[in-house]
Length: 275
Image 1 (cartoon, one colour):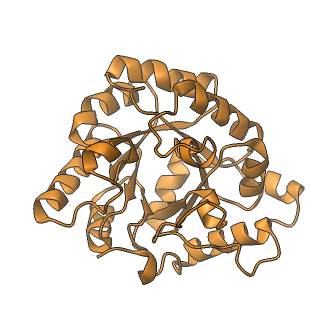
Image 2: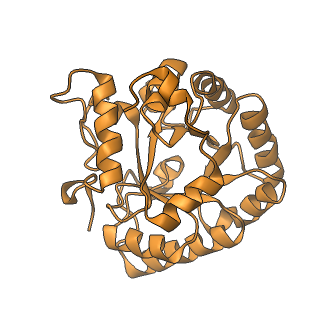
């Protein structure tokens, strides 16, 4: 962790090119969710590389059972708050449910997240069906992070929050989707709740960084919902998460430990992964 704010401010802002360099060099990328300026400042000072303004805010901030009620206005608001507390991290804003049903609608939504919110990149869920949208956005200068595996906006279609890609046909589809999204111009992909071996295979096959959540240690980086990482999310904590605040003096120490463990490759452990 950085000793003081002046030392943290000496860091250069994180860029896409730097994230690609980190993948090529085998340096682990750290990511956590953020929803407000105060948490964003703490995460930024601790050296977290990328902050995700996730539509998970619908559950951990607004108290919904799913992410589906979150609106584009909600994400713009929280992205702007995070941007106000950040100097160095790359900011990725989620495109909420039905804000990118067509490429044209996606462009309008992405423009708002970047112009009004201050995002550097937008994230959308889905595989081959999103190839046209990803190409449409990236050809217009909008960086895109894809999201495969367990896609929370499809929770009702998936029948719940379940591990994805265990069957061979599902694993093959995920591999094909990841390759197609990269070919369309995607700059990064999040793999959520997929078997570790499959995630390792996809990570090795792609040039773009792969960020895992419940996808094993072999991804290029890791992301957690910050409230899960601090052990303060109500209810049962996901299997892939860990309470980094337990036994620590304060939140800063917990964040520093998360960053250290991800970079060292000691988190996630086997107990946080799926086979």
